[in-house]
Image (cartoon, rainbow, N blue to C red; front, top):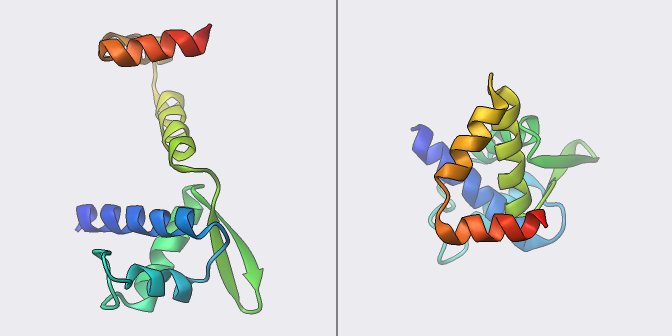
Length: 120
Protein backbone atom coordinates (compact mmCIF):
# COMPACT_ATOMS: atom_id res chain seq x y z
CA UNK A 1 0.00 0.00 0.00
CA UNK A 2 2.87 2.40 0.75
CA UNK A 3 4.15 2.00 -2.82
CA UNK A 4 0.69 2.82 -4.21
CA UNK A 5 0.50 5.92 -2.01
CA UNK A 6 3.99 6.95 -3.13
CA UNK A 7 3.12 6.62 -6.80
CA UNK A 8 -0.15 8.48 -6.22
CA UNK A 9 1.74 11.29 -4.52
CA UNK A 10 4.11 11.41 -7.50
CA UNK A 11 1.15 11.54 -9.89
CA UNK A 12 -0.42 14.36 -7.88
CA UNK A 13 2.84 16.32 -7.96
CA UNK A 14 3.11 15.78 -11.72
CA UNK A 15 -0.41 17.15 -12.19
CA UNK A 16 0.42 20.23 -10.13
CA UNK A 17 3.74 20.85 -11.93
CA UNK A 18 1.98 20.61 -15.28
CA UNK A 19 -0.89 22.88 -14.25
CA UNK A 20 1.30 25.88 -13.56
CA UNK A 21 -1.28 27.28 -11.16
CA UNK A 22 -2.83 26.23 -7.83
CA UNK A 23 -5.51 23.54 -8.18
CA UNK A 24 -8.37 22.41 -5.99
CA UNK A 25 -8.61 18.75 -4.95
CA UNK A 26 -11.47 18.29 -7.44
CA UNK A 27 -9.31 19.68 -10.27
CA UNK A 28 -6.43 17.40 -9.29
CA UNK A 29 -8.78 14.39 -9.23
CA UNK A 30 -10.19 15.36 -12.62
CA UNK A 31 -6.74 15.67 -14.16
CA UNK A 32 -5.65 12.35 -12.68
CA UNK A 33 -8.59 10.78 -14.53
CA UNK A 34 -7.49 12.12 -17.93
CA UNK A 35 -6.62 9.53 -20.59
CA UNK A 36 -3.03 8.30 -20.38
CA UNK A 37 -2.75 8.64 -16.60
CA UNK A 38 -2.59 5.59 -14.35
CA UNK A 39 -4.62 7.10 -11.53
CA UNK A 40 -8.19 7.62 -12.58
CA UNK A 41 -11.67 8.63 -11.69
CA UNK A 42 -11.91 5.60 -9.39
CA UNK A 43 -10.04 7.70 -6.84
CA UNK A 44 -12.22 9.00 -4.08
CA UNK A 45 -12.18 12.76 -3.56
CA UNK A 46 -11.17 12.16 0.06
CA UNK A 47 -8.14 10.14 -1.10
CA UNK A 48 -6.94 13.07 -3.20
CA UNK A 49 -7.50 15.45 -0.27
CA UNK A 50 -5.50 13.13 1.99
CA UNK A 51 -2.57 12.98 -0.45
CA UNK A 52 -2.60 16.76 -0.90
CA UNK A 53 -2.75 17.31 2.87
CA UNK A 54 0.18 14.94 3.47
CA UNK A 55 2.26 16.59 0.76
CA UNK A 56 1.48 19.97 2.34
CA UNK A 57 2.49 18.69 5.80
CA UNK A 58 5.79 17.42 4.33
CA UNK A 59 6.50 20.86 2.89
CA UNK A 60 6.15 19.83 -0.76
CA UNK A 61 3.04 21.96 -1.36
CA UNK A 62 1.73 25.33 -0.38
CA UNK A 63 -1.97 25.93 -0.11
CA UNK A 64 -4.21 28.94 -0.23
CA UNK A 65 -7.70 29.15 1.15
CA UNK A 66 -10.39 29.80 -1.42
CA UNK A 67 -13.81 29.93 0.18
CA UNK A 68 -14.15 26.89 2.40
CA UNK A 69 -11.51 24.80 0.65
CA UNK A 70 -7.90 25.04 -0.50
CA UNK A 71 -5.97 25.24 -3.74
CA UNK A 72 -2.56 23.58 -3.80
CA UNK A 73 0.68 24.34 -5.65
CA UNK A 74 4.16 22.80 -5.45
CA UNK A 75 6.83 24.75 -3.55
CA UNK A 76 9.43 23.80 -6.16
CA UNK A 77 9.91 21.92 -9.40
CA UNK A 78 10.87 18.24 -9.39
CA UNK A 79 14.59 18.93 -9.06
CA UNK A 80 13.96 21.39 -6.24
CA UNK A 81 11.88 18.88 -4.30
CA UNK A 82 14.52 16.18 -4.74
CA UNK A 83 17.17 18.59 -3.47
CA UNK A 84 14.99 19.37 -0.43
CA UNK A 85 14.66 15.64 0.31
CA UNK A 86 18.44 15.21 0.12
CA UNK A 87 18.95 18.16 2.47
CA UNK A 88 16.39 16.72 4.89
CA UNK A 89 18.25 13.40 4.88
CA UNK A 90 21.54 15.15 5.58
CA UNK A 91 19.92 17.11 8.41
CA UNK A 92 18.80 13.83 10.02
CA UNK A 93 22.23 12.18 9.80
CA UNK A 94 24.31 11.86 12.94
CA UNK A 95 27.51 12.31 10.89
CA UNK A 96 26.75 14.64 8.00
CA UNK A 97 30.36 14.59 6.75
CA UNK A 98 30.37 10.79 6.54
CA UNK A 99 27.10 10.76 4.60
CA UNK A 100 28.40 13.35 2.12
CA UNK A 101 31.65 11.44 1.75
CA UNK A 102 29.86 8.16 1.06
CA UNK A 103 27.49 9.90 -1.36
CA UNK A 104 30.40 11.28 -3.39
CA UNK A 105 32.16 7.89 -3.38
CA UNK A 106 29.08 6.28 -4.93
CA UNK A 107 28.55 8.85 -7.70
CA UNK A 108 28.99 7.78 -11.30
CA UNK A 109 31.87 9.39 -13.18
CA UNK A 110 29.42 11.63 -15.02
CA UNK A 111 27.64 12.73 -11.85
CA UNK A 112 30.97 13.40 -10.15
CA UNK A 113 32.04 15.59 -13.07
CA UNK A 114 28.74 17.53 -12.95
CA UNK A 115 29.16 18.06 -9.22
CA UNK A 116 32.75 19.27 -9.66
CA UNK A 117 31.61 21.78 -12.29
CA UNK A 118 28.81 23.03 -10.06
CA UNK A 119 31.18 23.54 -7.13
CA UNK A 120 33.55 25.73 -9.19
